[in-house]
Amino acid sequence: MSYTQRCLPQFLHIRDRSALLPPPLSLSLKHQGQSKHRRVVKMSAAELTNSRISYESFAIKPPVHPTYDLKGIIKLALAEDAGDRGDVTCMATIPFDMEVEAYFLAKEDGIIAGIALADMIFHEVDTSLKVEWSKNDGDFIHKGLQFGKVRGRAHNIIVAERVVLNFMQRMSGIATLTKAMADAASPAYILETRKTAPGLRLLDKWAVLIGGGRNHRMGLFDMVMIKDNHISAAGGVTNALKTVDLYLEQKNLKMEVEVETRTLEEVEEVLGYASQTKTSLTRIMLDNMVVPLTNGDVDISMLKEAVRLVNGRFETEASGNVTLETVHEIGQSGVTFISSGSLTHSVKALDISLKIDTELALKVGRRTGRA
Image (cartoon, rainbow, N blue to C red; front, side):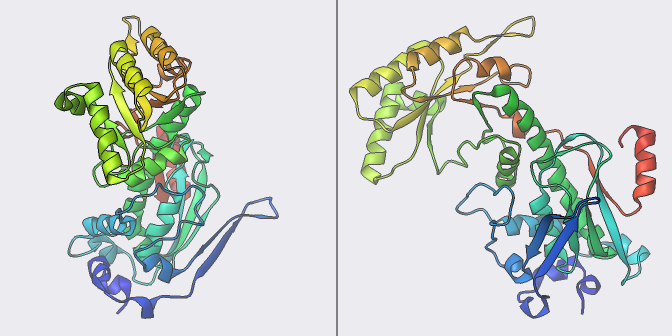
């Protein structure tokens, strides 16, 4: 019994599909007016079915996480959509064996992200679907642009459609804002935070990389970050740093250590401790030292003084009151990094669609100003 006959929930519970898998797909897209191929998508269906995914062919690789199951997230998203019956509308309206081409259309300008993930989703649903792109992750797309297509069985394309678009729209929104903030922040580097959608952290942070930002720590496990509550519970900045240095020594661990400071006095205390003791400290966070003014500008004099005090002995990170409007001025303060939770916690999705009838879609888009 085929995938479409059994429908998605049953497909997800098949334990061994290796006998059903076709040989590796080798697809290419040739641009109009060009003699060379833009991009080749070559995927082994067996490789995609395994729990381990090869990222070697990705234009921008996702960040590393020791326990995150990206395949599991894809399956969960598909199962969430299909429920216990699958796509009843498709089964009711579309002939079982109908094949179509559907085209990705940009409805606004931005940075595209999630192309590699879309490939994985389509191949998870149906390894015979043929996916071609004229853009790569991290490329700029403009409103009205047709930048990719998928061809194959209509049922399976439509089953994958919303899951693909949900991921791509969110990731592209993050990448678009990251690109704008990263450009404005230069020469400082822009970072996201842990303020990500639960369960989607790797994808949110991947989108930041695609947009030209850098990743902060992935979670609680890969960096020591001494924040205000740790400092309060430990009895002060110095005590917190001492206990961290002792812990890392006892556990024979080597990892980056960051400490949050909220006043110039705390900065001086950290520097005083570091000047007298061998420490694992690598970065000082300068938190809320950007003061918003009533006219919409910001006062960065305190931040600049903190950077002057550190004087390059440690990396510095500005945090708090970081927006697209303020990030350029903050970047001129001399800080190494600027972190902003807004990159991921307040993301505005980039409007993208997948249409079989592109002529009508563009007509409607022009009518509504979205094409």
